[in-house]
Length: 298
Image 1 (cartoon, rainbow, N blue to C red):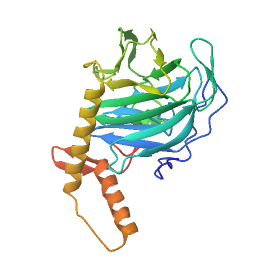
Image 2 (cartoon, rainbow, N blue to C red):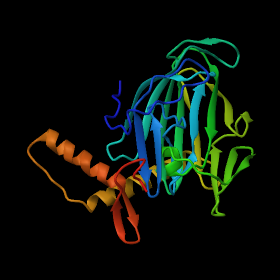
Image 3 (tube, one colour):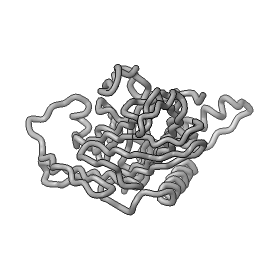
């Protein structure tokens, strides 16, 4: 089983409990960052609205982003960040659920892999469902989402006497737009797009019925950005991942390199270099390392 990444942000953060089942145990948090965007999620890949979220320009543009299967949460197998801090991966499996036809699916029959990255103000998600049972199954999965458009200080606990205007969500066949007008008069938007049209789509939830034959897999791509772009797909995800990794390598080349005869020491240095590269943002004045994610990434 993949070990959880040792880096965590705030061990005191208690993650909100699911409404579909008993409260979930708190888990360590994982961070991704690229430019002026960063995401903080739990080991399941979920955003639950405490101190986590997807932030763009110091504003939380995604305050909820949860995945359920068969109306239930999933069992965690493991989660990790890639060595270069570009990709977050969570491996999960199903609890006992029923297929869309009402057939019982035992625990562990469905493997779910969530892979996530950030590139150019967009959050890219790849959700792979693998059916290890001997039966064809049509599986109901749901993505629950929300955007509160709170700034960093509000998320941290400050209160504001007045806020801007939250707009009603605008849904399309395979996307939903969440909007907010700030007190500064500037509009802020979060567009959530899917690689296939949901079977049901509301202003806070997308429901899919995904047919997965035995011993096979199906993939769903999701993107969250300031506008609706092209339909999410494998090529877009791979291109974003390749460019993000290339950009991270370029940042690391600017730093000092230290080598020794000790393998553990070398691994520690490489991890430190990757962490500094993650925290560094290119400004007009040059590269600037932020003090930490999330509260000091501003």
